[in-house]
Image (cartoon, protein in one colour):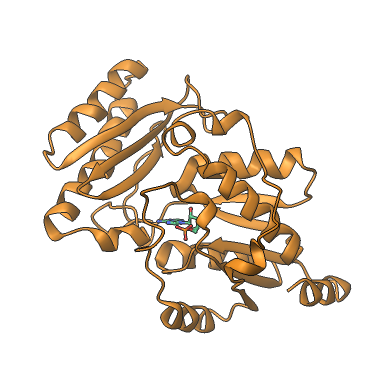
Amino acid sequence: MRALAREWHVAGETIGLVPTMGALHAGHMSLVAVARAETSRVVVSIFVNPLQFGAGEDFERYPRPVESDLAMLREARVDAVYMPDQATLYPPDLSTRVQVGGPTETLEGVQRPGHFEGVATVVTKLFWATHADRAYFGQKDAQQVAVVKRLAADLDSGVEVRGCPTIRDADGLAVSSRNAYLSPAERAAALSLSGSLRTAAKMYAAGERDAGRLRARIQEVLAAEPLVRIDYADLVDPSTFRPPGTLAVLAVRIGKTRLIDNHDVSKPFLADRNS
Ligand code: AMP
């Protein structure tokens, strides 16, 4: 991968990296499309990163449909797919971890100890392996975007990190590889996530600026759905991931599935960006 990336740079190409864990969907492909438009060589990495899964999370059952992933990437005419195996990225004597402060200290960082350290470590390795000029991440994982931007700046990586809009199904549900775990009843319940964000954006548009009242209304919409258990629902600043701010961030559990979503309530909620 590094040799290929060097050749490209010598030839004056710019390299865009789209890191993924596979099980590709319209969200991932939207990142590929932005990368395609902004850089001359697009690399998609596929690696289900054990370091970013906690004990008891879904590492083992995470979907790995490699053949259909490769078919989608061939169709999108990406220039390279980087699929390192676990032993290549994490040999037994691996002794380094990348730890980011700041935006890792709240919400997902608190609820999933070690998660962002796993993300930061793999992303650093992927940046170096691919010699990326730009890297594309989905706003769906807004805290991850904040963490990776912090990491890229703090370590003088020279990589420009781009956060790209969340792709949603027509009914508002944010597209996610984990949606495949949901039963039809659970999927119906999951609409309360986007529903609560839409409600909060409408309240904001109607003049509501009190974070407490916006948060209470979001929690009310989620709580009205008996299958949903709230991990957190808060309004934060998109860089620090602490209040005050207008980014509404949610994590819920529905059955055995954990889902996250977010929206800047100062902007209209558009469910149909991908249609
Ligand atoms: P994952 O394979 O789940 O690790 O996701 C790989 C990248 O795709 C991350 O940057 C995600 O934020 C992004 N992504 C996942 N779902 C969506 C979505 N619905 N819209 C936009 N980007 C997404």
